Length: 183
Image 1: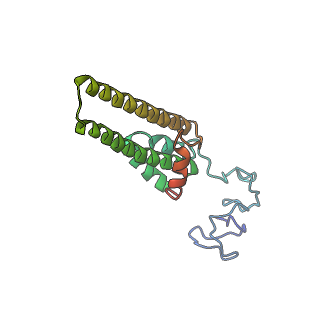
Image 2: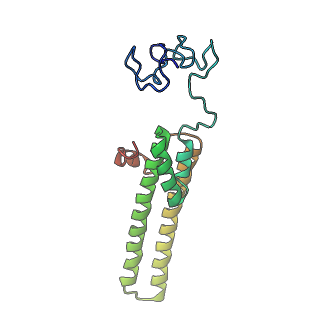
Image 3: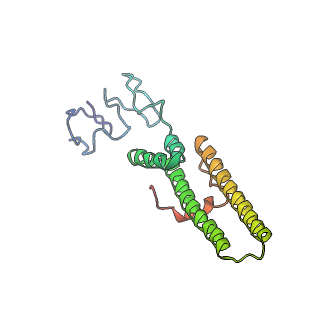
């Protein structure tokens, strides 16, 4: 085995190179297999053919975490666990957006519940005024939840496409409010 930093031959079990003092597995100046000098852009060693960089065709740069985070609460928990072992900018971004959706969803549910609750405390002069108020509350609730659902769907599509675009309506606020989460 050769040190990737200085190219000197070392014991395969060494924790540090005796020549340069660095971790022998870190660096990109030399091939780990043959010790020949390389440059940072090389993917394989031109002398021995060993891969210099970890090439993974399944690397998704956080796209999986971003997508799974939108799929129910269990999906969100699984995404947090996956993100913990492989932190990516895209995954963290969409986890924060989902936290924002959860907070907004709970807030909207409480707000609409309070509005509907006020309906029960009102005294109606006639059955028609009660039906009118019920219809009004139902239409407002429907419009609010459709807007919320559209916002979630747009954000999910951004996750599928690997984009870090804020959700419509409250996305910019989510970026500010939850900026320190999932770093």
